[in-house]
Image (tube, rainbow, N blue to C red; front, side):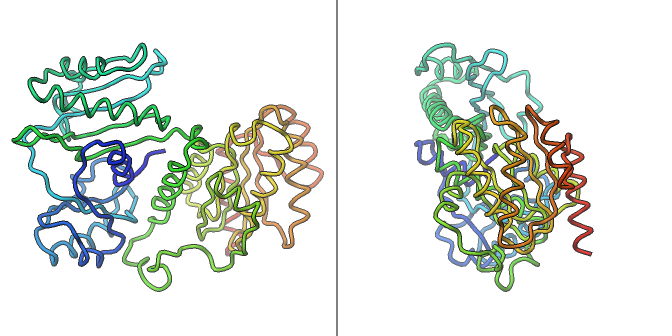
Length: 410
């Protein structure tokens, strides 16, 4: 999952990668408390590309213009995504822009360093200039310096850009990332380098080892999916305080808090609850529901294998806690359960789900269940006796959940 630019730059700063003075803007009026001297650059914080061409990046020189620009950007959808946050950043005068990235080479199964002497919006049209260096052995400064030479850099830039590449690599390794990208890395007339934009793709399977990334990822999810309507209609009443959770939620137990901190639990105000295992599966399910016109409510990632080591008892307990958490909101009309089994059979999972739902203190929502793994036929037979269909394909499960969510709200 991609982090927002301001979140990526927080990690850059912690690693020592040079970034500009900046400030997060949650509301246009926050501009009045800006601590960065003008001129500044206001940037829409969305996961889509092409922000500049769409009008999501504006340079302003005073407070009046900045407030007006912030209001316009907050209400500007970029490929149907509205920003929940803006980034106000000092303006930087550049003479050259280059592209840098560290990614995984799927064929070589090794990290690869990428670089182009032409960055920014021009990088897509200069693919032939992209250079790469595969990290075949233990990483050292040699790999970073080799990339700068292949990019055709000279003099002081070899050292300064190599230093940035090294820090990118260590961040990539320490956080188990899938991708870290700086585009552009700006170079001013004095030869100083600055990360002017950044992208980080988090490996969902590694989130259990990085509590800081789990927190950023959870914030990222709320930012993306709460921004589906114009900010002008959102920023009033209780929502202006930033508390977008439903008022009907009940206090969480200590065990639920444990699950909440270990996984991703996000409270929204839709009608479809989501329970999955694995960050990738959870985000895919969430995306598909939105694309199908549904409105997700509470959703929870139970976590991958590292959370419970595929111990059946541990997994059963996590399912029970997850069901309690996800169904606690009174806005939920449908619960979509999408779980991939491994050592634990689909039949066992089906038993845990139905047994615990019967013990809830309130009437459970309508169920749409998708279980993938061994003993799925046995699980289907078991659920059919309870009039609960087991859906094989995710697309079909999405269609059913969205249809039920719409029909029960009419």
